[in-house]
Length: 407
View 1 (cartoon, rainbow, N blue to C red):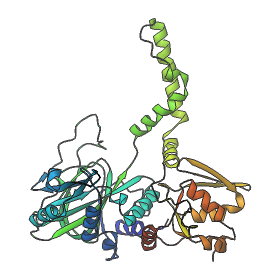
View 2 (view 1 turned 135 degrees about the vertical axis):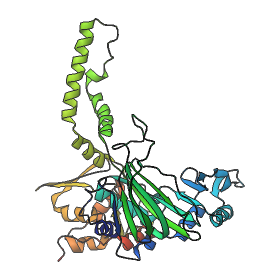
View 3 (view 1 turned 30 degrees about the horizontal axis):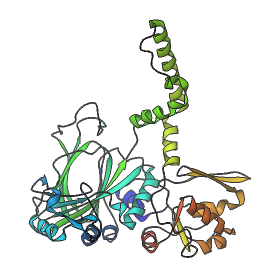
View 4 (view 1 turned 90 degrees about the vertical axis):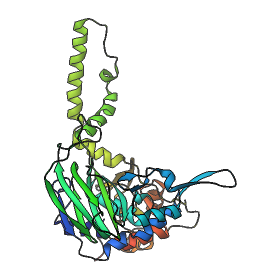
């Protein structure tokens, strides 16, 4: 999948892949000045807020360094059938913005097609789950207090300016649920400066940081934060607890009342079995299983009610695993395993490239009638037919897929 944002971030940071994620604090600048506003604008963010039935804490507002009570900007309405719906009160929200406030909308990729496609591309690139949050700050409002995140982030300044203070970690690789608190930031600063439209920064997990407009006066700032949630040894051990259910020795009751020799024997059996389990299911197996078993994101499904789809795109959270030999092609993704004839391999790779595919051109570019594959991939949830909104997002950010058979 070739996504313009992924390519632009690599160029801005001087990266050649996702390996530096989580390494060092990095700054850069996007070379295309039009790219930030194509990702999002303040007006588009507010339009999304207005049209969605949002709730707290997905949408939050802050003023004077404190989080406002949802009642200050939400309104509960009741339809004539007695259905209660909560909406953002745009009049109250406007007043807050005039006075100076910070608005936060989490998981904007859930609502916005362009950011949905961007997050999927970043997931295929990084092989980690990604979500994007939007932060709109008006006037001279403060942002969050100095804090750290339990995941790596890439920040894209969309419009306006915001002052940042970035420091190192005070505890190595801290976690949200941890053995010790992590409440004291380091005194030394890694970087203090201003982000302007087109600037990007990468802040590794655990690095303390703060953004504010208290020194800016009037105006506004909008930035996007892409969060990359990497897996840890703790996640691997949690996964192992599910795998251990296969073995009777782990399912057996712990011997509380038996003779000391019997208890010692059980402890030894458990220790040996645990060692064998860790060897049979190493971290690499966990990471591979996570990619293979992750369900695809939600998408429109019409089951052909409105006619056959004209185009489709792969919507799996991670790149499908495609294995081919002389007889068959095996596709593993989204908890599914699909096997098709080996001659379909060019069409399979084209349709599962992650880029928009015109179905009529599949036969032209691969020499294979892909209509049967289209039905399978859509029915099994690996692909989605392109709606107008999804097509627009793909067209703007992804290059159309082409077969390797095409000159």
